[in-house]
Amino acid sequence: MEEKIYGNTPCYLGGKKVSLKDGNYNDRDVLVYGVPWEGSVTWGDYTGCELGPKVIRLNAARYSGYLPELDHLDVLSHYTIGDLGDVDVVPADTPETMDRIEKFALGVWKTGKFPVAFGGDHGITYPIVKALSEEIQGKVGIIHLDAHYDNHPDYEGDLYARSTPFHRIYESESVRNESIVHMGIHGPRNQPETGKYAEEVGATTISVREIRRAGTNLTELASKAYSIASEGTEAVYLSICSDVLDFAFNPGGPVDGNGVTSYELLELIHEFARLGIRGIDYVEVYPQQDTNDNSSHFVTYAVLYALAGKILGEKI
Image (cartoon, rainbow, N blue to C red; front, side, top):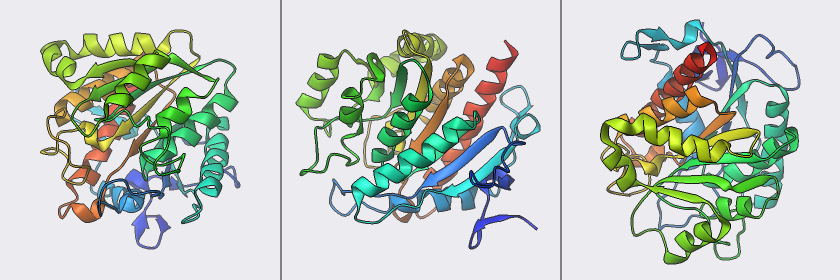
């Protein structure tokens, strides 16, 4: 009988239910956890991403780890998965929740396993990265796949809203701002000052047009981005917002056109993982906006492509 992480929800990809407290994760290679947090809603009634971790797990139940298009690689024959459940968030208490995410993430980083976090909104990335910076000796570099910079100083006074995490990260002395790559940026839901903030701190922007124009040279573009993120850093972290995808490929994400295709995103994720990333998060999937759960299903493709890249990187 399939092990449940809670209620009727199975452990991710048939993994084992584990906990940091019990220390029963030692035989696992990958640790998955959810952050069912939605803070300040920044666009009308488009809401519900706190349901992401549960629905991602439910829809992953139909998948194996076999990727015939990647030389018949079976990811789950190489890696075992442990599911840590979800961070215990506190609705309507943002500072307390950020603190809990950071403490939980720090415990995950200390295991030395490869972590995969499911949001939740993009505000969760700041405490996860902060925890990573506390665990390593050097600086952190970040590849940020998103339609938007998410670097506003605040949202109506909220310092940790989904539109602000990279402003908090810019302020961190443990992240090398010149090693932040905002990739896939596109569209008029960005504000002029957001591009200016990124430029002022020394971050790199690689727009969706640059990705599209790369065509069959996506691997070369990924290598360029990784080179920037890894320079002068000890760890490179990958943060993925669903809206980097065009809305044709992301019905359960924020409404943004002219984004990347599912093929382009998976190829980039695969190559970044092959080159060497310390962990990933995938945020802002809104199940209640998506009748067929297409966006929730796609998350597992992204995770498997990342793990497949990691497997290939370890063989080099």
